[in-house]
Structures are given as structure tokens and as C-alpha cells.
Image (cartoon, rainbow, N blue to C red; front, top):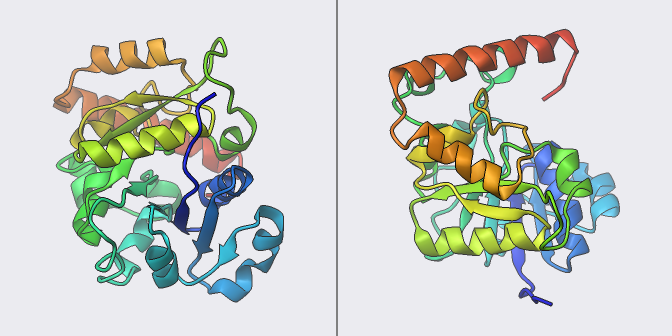
Length: 247
């Protein structure tokens, strides 16, 4: 049986994904420090449910000595302190889980509309730190409910994209510990293949199917692909809005 080191993990964002990760990671024995935009005093209920320690965003970054997760709406990324990650040691992976919802939440972001940047490249520009993209294409409650032991038939796989090979390997090990097969999804630019509107988004694919899908899309996004997946996501957003989904 594979064993994993106990880590200090900072989570910036206490929404669906941040809360789900806090539940799972504390359950695995990790020390989790979680922050939101309203202050640690508003996170006491979440602390009781998850075992995570409520802190400020700056403290989450400081205490996340082994790994940091940024999981807030894209529209709020520019509001984070510019020096938030300045004191984080080199080699500490920083995960970005973001998805772009222009109609329901984020408004129009020019670079993402044009396709000149992927979501996580845009986050990376703002935070000035290499990002690893994961946990954006799976439903939050599936993180809590659907992790399975290695070798389980049909085990869900998650794409992990990033430019820092060492950081990506650390994140892939965490994905495996959470009960999912980690699939190397290439560079941060290539994370367009796991964004909303693409076949891998919300699909809970096993590893062989996910690899097949990523390969079929190629590595350089074409204008036609950008237009297709943008249109797909617009339909997804419209359906979510009609259903009253809250992000």
C-alpha cells in the first residue's frame, strides 16, 4: 500500500471546490488552512465540518508550506494582494482550479474571450507564480464521494496541466491520494483541453478515455476549436442559469 507524506496545505477560497478539498484533505490527515474573502470568523461552521483551520488569505499562503490551492471566482483574482504568493518558497506547487463563467459570474475577460490565454495562464499572470491546473473539470461533490482505490475499474481520472514538471508531479501524487487517476495533460497552455465546453469537462472519464480524448484534440488550439467550445459552454451556462445553479 502506497503511503503519502502529511502536508501543510493552504486553500484560498471556501466555495464548493475549496470546501470539498478541505473535507478530503483533512480526512487524509493533512493540516489544512482555509481562507475566504470575508475573514476567518465567517468560516467557523466550515471548520467544524471539515477540521480545517480558518485563516486569512495571507496566512493560507504562508502556512501552505507544502502546497497551495487557489479556488476563487476568476473575477476576484485581480482583487487578491499582489504580493500574496511573494513569500512562498520555490518548489511549492500552487494549484488553480478556475473556470470562466462570463454570463453567470465573471463578466467578459478579453484575453479569455479571444483565446489568447487559458484561464490558468491568466491567473498566473495576475499572481506572478507558476500554476498547476486541476480539479476544475470535476463536480465538487464527486471529489468527496467518488474517490476510489488504485486499480478500481472505471476509476475517475483528472487532467493535470502545468509547465513546472516537479510541481506537476507533486500535484499528480495528491490526485492519486485523493482516489483519482492523475493524467498528465501537458503544459498550462494545453489546459484549454479541460476547460468548460470541452469533452472532458464534467465527464468523469477513466484514464484511458481521457488520454484518448486529449490526444484527439491535439496540442495547439485552433480557432474552430475555440469557437466550438465557447459555444458549448454558452449553452451550458444558459442551462445552469435556467436551473438556478449558484456558482
